[in-house]
Image 1: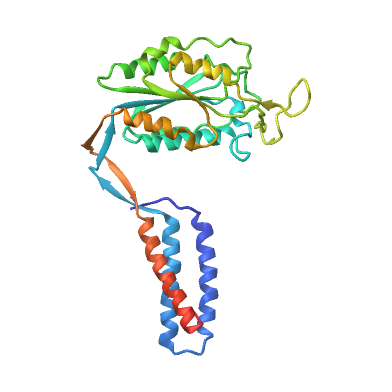
Image 2: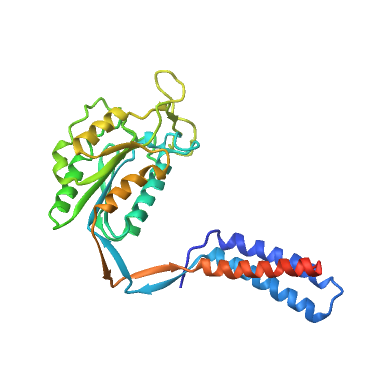
Length: 321
């Protein structure tokens, strides 16, 4: 069994201990028979014990699981320039929060596919080649951090083309596979470069979408150099710099790749595209010699809910703990 605590045990254990101590004092101050007090203590210990176990979020190992495999290679290409930390996604979140939320959703919905991840700023980097291990790709996403403002350079959308071509060609060599690309950016070019054509890659792409993050009104970006958390300043105006989405550039990339384009405001915006991808894929079930983890928190939750209902009934009937 493995655990993945929601809150640190260093927080949960002291809190539960204080709660238990307070309840025990209340119980033993009652003028009841000893068996009634012991029964109350037993209920309280069970409820708080289950609360502790639920917080641990336990999972049990399953070996040689039967998994659903799709004939899809999914390539994520993610802009990680500093403008992707502009605060205009959802209710003031940074764009990259929306990117990670949306990509996690895609990983879940297209489970059983092969996934790969390229990030780019002033250079491109393959964080994960095509793999069936979606958890490793999700972990690779978690390594993406805001670039240090001091080292940040102007952004260009031409940087990932070479690495994209390498991975797309490797996918195209597989028999009966479909290659899907999700190109993710705010579309800004700030290094005076000219957007080059992506049309040479179109022959290797079977579907996907260019996903833009950001608004036309734009958002401010916090600086990340050292311990500073001030907003980045525009050197010309001396006011807070504003990053705005450039949909024209991204629509051109989508046209070159012959895939869809959408501005993402929430992860639900990609549902239609994902349904289209799934409907065009083939699926097979296969026994895999691998370890999977099944979350059993819900079972503990049901037991805990039953104990709480029991406790409420006792309080209503007896008007005491």
